[in-house]
View 1 (cartoon, rainbow, N blue to C red):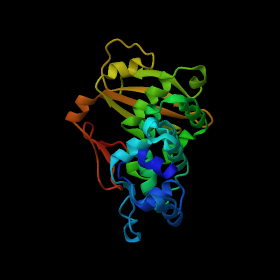
View 2 (tube, rainbow, N blue to C red):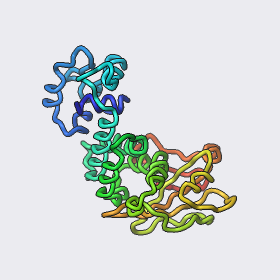
View 3 (cartoon, rainbow, N blue to C red):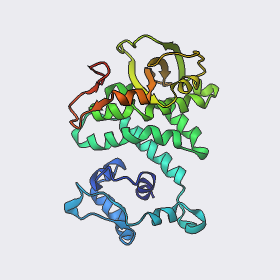
View 4 (cartoon, rainbow, N blue to C red):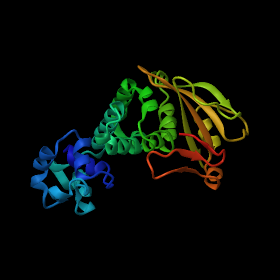
Length: 272
């Protein structure tokens, strides 16, 4: 079920067969053995292709069949449960990133999809996810080992994840995320110990700031919001919020070279 779940939750071909197995905590032999009865519905790479080609459905219609209880009956797979399991695997990998080259693709994959899957999760799995996030070591985000991982973790979906987490609004959640400092209109200082810089560029930055219960009138952007994130092990997040249209006119670039820096062309400086 977990193998099909990975293909359903994230059908994009970001991982080759071997890395799909690694993501799920399986060796190649076990992975092969688990899918032998699925030859008619999934594309299984040959042993020579395992390091290049992913496992995938021949047609998307089979995936649609599996997540439709009216059509699949006893073979039904709950999409929300599969996505929850996917998030747990992503968090596991991010929490155990030790910089091993063999884990690089899986770590970057986890970083790319974890936050978006969190805030899109629905049904009764949100309380369970919050429990897992309460135990997650967010300070590990400071120790991401590649530029691609840091970029995926701290730019884009991370900002929406923070808004979603804060919007849940329960007393329990306030121990997981809280506003430490109101927005500063000055250029944010470089993060110090136990602080992490993040960026979020949105169509309506005013609405984004307001979602944290801040009423600042008509401020100028970019603005920086300081949040405390994490319960058992916390980190302070300095979120620079800006108008995405303005940013796109003077873009932030990430080189395809994973050893290169992310450069803010507005300021002419390295930001990650």
